[in-house]
Length: 279
Image 1: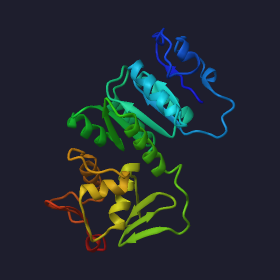
Image 2 (image 1 turned 180 degrees about the horizontal axis):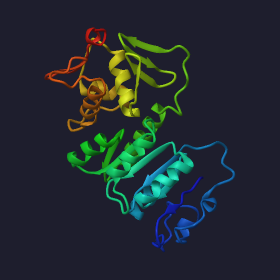
Image 3 (image 1 turned 180 degrees about the vertical axis):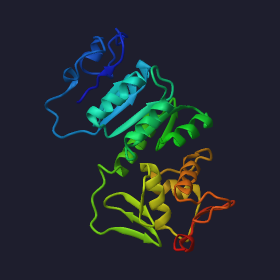
Image 4 (image 1 turned 90 degrees about the vertical axis):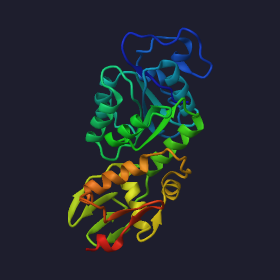
C-alpha cells in the first residue's frame, strides 16, 4: 500500500507505533523523510494522488491511513506555505485543505490554488456548524467541505465524487455539447463559453451549471441538485449550492437587480430559464 510523507519543520512523528500506519511513520521515525521511503514499488496501478494539508498530526495520520487503505496515494503537508511549490511540482489530483494552518491559512491557500487551476478539486475541512467558514471556503474556490470531526466514510465518498467529476477522470465524449442560446458547454473538454467568450469556472461551478442546463425550464430544489451533484440529500444547512449559484450569476452578468438566467423561485428552488439564455 502506498504511504505518505509529511512536509513540515522539525516536528517529529509520534514516538508510539500507530497500528493504522505502515512504513517509517508506524515506527515513529522522523517525519522529514524522503518520499521514496514510503513508496511501494509493487503497486499494480497508479493511484490518485491526494494532498492532505493538515497540521494536526494525529488527525492527518488517521485520515491518510484510511484513504491509503482505499487505494489513494496521500501526501500530508503540515504547513500552508509548503503547498504551492509541491503543487506545481506534482500536480495532485485533489487537495484536502484545513483552514487553520501555519505559514499560510487555508482560505488564502485555497484562493491561490484556485488561481493555479480552475479544475483542481478542493475539499475543505471546517469546524462543525461554522457556516461562516463554510461559506468563506466556498467563496474562495473550494468545491465542497466536510466538517470536523468527520466520519471517514463521508470523507471518502466526497473524495470519490470530486475525483469522478474532475476533468482528469471523466471520459471524453465526442461532439457532446449543450447549446442554449449563446451558452455553449463542451462536455468533452469541460469548457464553457458565453456569446463566444470563454468563461472560467471552478470544477464545482461547472458541474452545477451542467446540472442546471440539463434541467432547463424545471424548478430544482437544493435536495435534487445535491442528489445529482454528489448523490447526497440536503441536510438543511449546506450552503454550497447557494454560494455556487451566486458565483455563476456574477460570471454570466446575471446579478444586476433580479436574476433572470438562474432565477430564485422562493420556497421551491432555482430555475434555469431557457428563454433568458436565448435572449
